[in-house]
Length: 629
Image 1 (cartoon, helix red, strand yellow):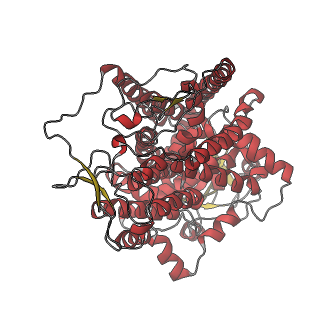
Image 2 (cartoon, helix red, strand yellow):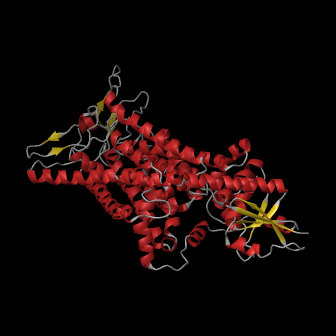
């Protein structure tokens, strides 16, 4: 049944974006490039400091590049996939092993994260100025944040860009692609026959496959992102449930299986349970009081994860974000939930269904255009639910109480929810007219503000300032009474204060992180001198502590192989047992220890001139102990 037809004039041309509207996009580009350049400068200065866990991922990349092995998991454990090693392997094959080469893919992932965050903010209804703010917040880099983003230690650098990509695919699948057209079709509103495929379903199949593939890769790389996958999947199932029953569901399942194939095949072959391994490693079986967990999870966790703390600690004034985060999480969820429950306005020509937005109504579905106007708050609510679940799971684990500063890396995925988290603040500032309005008029009558006789202003919040883009923002109702204006003004001032405090606090933490770069660079130079000295001495096998061994082996390109010992000279945890076998077979294996460490003190007691004793070669910051024969 055809209810109406709307045809686009063939001679219609797409309006140009006003120059003033390009300013925030240009500023966002500059801010993003500054954030990328800052991180590149850190990498060139050997910051953030590397460690043996990152070197373990580097060894996996080295083995892949040489064709000597294709590991599924981080060596020595049955969880945390080696995606970063596969990304770095081509560069390692070309340039050889180094920390810089290992981190170039993580820098590219960060750049992708910024670009996708800009795009997601715009698709969720934010204008260019709001997207600029999101990019600015994400461009800052405190000690904890740059470690999460740049260290190729497994799991963290790829989670945020992939999580944002998943949210973008969800928006695209639920709301359609702006500007898409079905050739030879006019915009028709009506009821499709039962059992027929929705219009545009075939064109969406690659996006369904992409959604499944990204989800599978995320679950293999690190299941920390699972709450976001489930929440966004629920939105997708709610808005496209008819498609999921058919080919779309099969394509999504195929992509999911392909992405998670390494994990699934390994679990079937060896009977491993990655989820159980993650729970054990998180400290779920260790002792910590609930007071310690709540303090580490809710007080220290959010400021550390969002980059508002100095290296290694949080000052008292930097903890303001902890209560603000919880309040914003609740406020943003309430706002999105109220928008979802709000009745839709009567359909008009401005919201007429068309092939452009895939909103052909079907039997039992919402009215035409309803899907698109529900997408933005639904996806925001899913992102907030994912963030809340991650925070709750982290707070419940003993890791939050036992090692809160280091374990805050588990909350790095909270950055995925930043566009949804800041939305109430931006909305309050805009309603109070404390922030610039977007340039350019709305592109269709449905987005124009309307006034009724009661003196209330109604209409969609100007979420998109690009002509030709459908706006997905919330409706606003602004009272014109004196009391209403004062409340709106007060809320706007508070919102601007929080929005200004975020980049301000993050900038201080970023400056503190920069202050530690010279010391990190000096330590890296001392380690390079250690590797060169071992090579000059002809040492090929050593024993050392855990945080020395694999770092030394990777830096030397496996020219030096290392077996782990503890401070009592007893065998420690070797992630690659083959190294221990090689070291034990060498009677001339040396010992390496940081100067002033307990291990060095223990080895100093074995120094002497006779057979069976050790002689020492000192390198700045390090001591090499060679056996006497």
